[in-house]
Amino acid sequence: MMIGVAVVLYVVFSILTGLCGSKRRLGFIGTFIFSLLLTPLVVLVVLMLTGPSKEVEWHPRPPERG
Image 1 (cartoon, rainbow, N blue to C red):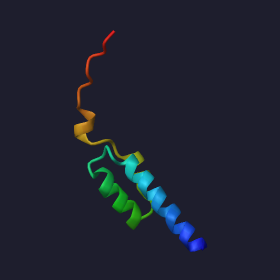
Image 2: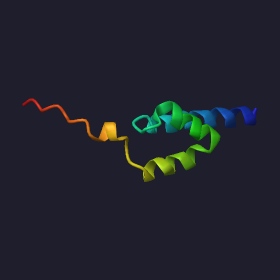
Image 3: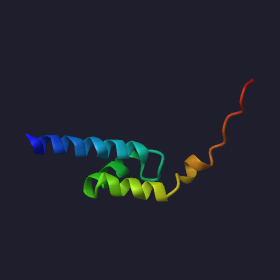
């Protein structure tokens, strides 16, 4: 019973880590797989140390209407 809960929590944290990495070069799937293989905590630290993808970083914002 406790092992099942631990596995579910691990997968949930991996999904949340994948969402945090969705704007990165690896995207959601790559970040999710890395967090499953390593740990979500390690991958979150790596995400904090690295910047967003160049594509995300350089998209011009639409002009504000006002």
